[in-house]
Structure formats: structure tokens, C-alpha cells
Length: 237
Image (cartoon, rainbow, N blue to C red; front, side, top):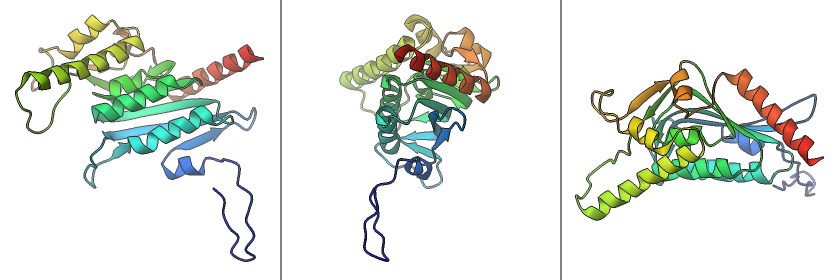
């Protein structure tokens, strides 16, 4: 953005992108002092907000702000990779899938790390990176789509919900090691949650099921991302 000098009326030259926009949105550019690598840190926390605004006391991640940020990651040559930190209870299905698809389609190295929780629509978000991590104490609640409010009991509504469920299952299975039928079994489990259908996976369990690649924290995730960046740069030399 061009800014104007109010003292002499002269226009300043556009400043080189330095991550100010990202910082304003609660995100950061991590710049290595040794090799100059630029990594965008995307923090997805709280509830994924969709087309309707949530209450003022809710901690939300707004998809209309995240999507342009991800487009910037793809287009800015000064950005080498993306690190996604996840601690979400889920939220709007369409918005969550849009973010997950956007992350997955970026052709730069990207690593996802689940901290605290990656619940509901947070599951496809968690698997959208090239490599995925979960800390030992983090949980992932895998369950079918929940519909808020009144739903008309007509065949078309049930078909729409089922097709949306299929989209989530298909995306998750295609970006992880778990098979679709195994994911359905976990998702529609009736023996674990007392008031709901689904499963709770903690740390290593999510890895054993094939949803997440590795157990590890920020150190593992950062080292992996740097390795992916170096590998990509070496392959293009």
C-alpha cells in the first residue's frame, strides 16, 4: 500500500512486504537470520467462523481473512513455506473445507501441527499439510456433521448432509494414510461418546490410525518444514 507523507505532500515508494498485514491478523512471518527463509505462521484457533458472525465472546478464526492470506503465501516469492498451528473445536463446515483445500493446493512446503485439539472440521484442516504432527496430549474428536437449528426431515436435506459428509471423508482420506472405510468406522462409532457419535483420538492414537503422520512438537514441525524447503530449493537448482 502506498502511503503519503503529510509534511511535504510527496508520495513514498511502496514498502516491501514485511508481514505487517499478517501480524494485524494475528499471524506472523518467521524470518531466518542465517539463510533468509521466510515462513508464514498461520494460527487457527477457537471456532471456524463461516458466513454468520459468532458471538462477541467467541474465539474465532475468520475464513474471509485466512483465504487471502493463503493466496499471499502462494504468490509471494519471499515466502518459502507455511506452518499451520491448530487448536480448534471445529465450526463451519464449508469454511473449514475451503481453508483446508486452499492449504492443500499451495505448492510450497507446508506442515501442520495439532496443539490442544483438532476437532470436527479441524480434522481435514489438520491433514492439509505435506507433513502433519500432533503433540502427545492433543485430542482429535472425529464425528459426523452436526446440524444446528431446525432441519426439515425431507429426503433432499438428508442427501445434502450425506454428500457433505462424503466430502469431508474423501478429503481427509486422500490427504492422510487412513482408508475411507476405516475413517467412517471411527466417525460413526457409537460406543465411546456418551451423548454423541464419534471417537476421541489422543496424540499417538491419531498417528496409529493413520490420520496424522507423526507425534511431535514445534521443534519437530519446524525442522521438518526447513528440510522440505531445502529439498524443494535443491531440486530446482
